[in-house]
Length: 295
Ligand code: UDP
Image (tube, rainbow, N blue to C red):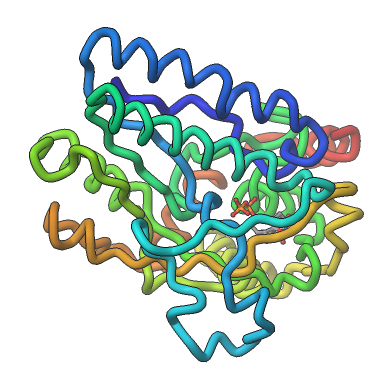
């Protein structure tokens, strides 16, 4: 059984916490229980967000001088989340409890499991574009893409200083297929799936995406596409708090599965931006602009 169902969009976490907890904990409990009854191997998609914020961010190590305070290891890194009032953590805590439930069922009832913690998968078809095939605020890739398509400014939340590592969907799928095909190595393990080499701040991501957009449209004016700052409160509403950095330790996936990501950030962004451009280029701009304003 492979469980991919989730609500995993930060714009939902602080404004719709009950549906987030329902979709990410209460409902999947039933899936785990069925797997126990039927003696099935459960491959569960969790999230890198279970790590919460880095120890470095709490200790004021702003230069990240000590990797032990920010590197994310599946089996030893503590999972640290903010206070209850910051409902951003409704997602991370639901996912964490789900992981603990699965592990508990493994220990008590012998459930075979594999838990995957994705770190910012990027690629074609990763998200909706508001006003075309969805409504609301999507994740950062689609937010920046919508701005590029509409000729609206790309918005950097709190200055765009948060860092993410981005892994190509093709590399990620390869990891998952290896897990499925090598049960003896992947069973009863938790795996990070990410790419240490593709780390960017959100400001750098916005700049790289407008470069990719200029390349795929053959229009150099996009190199100057406007980028503006917006506060987390304005963008997501009350109760938003950001994960500062997500740098995965990937030695387990390499040692057990022989998996390493190979696709660079540049090629991943060019493929993804080109896909979105081809998919949505024929939408009249005014219609797109109107739809986004309503959203
Ligand atoms: N973000 C941003 N501008 C946007 C949308 C998101 O600066 O238009 C930031 C967000 O605050 C976070 C990062 O981009 O720091 C990644 O957001 P994403 O939606 O991918 O979710 P996450 O990686 O936190 O799960």
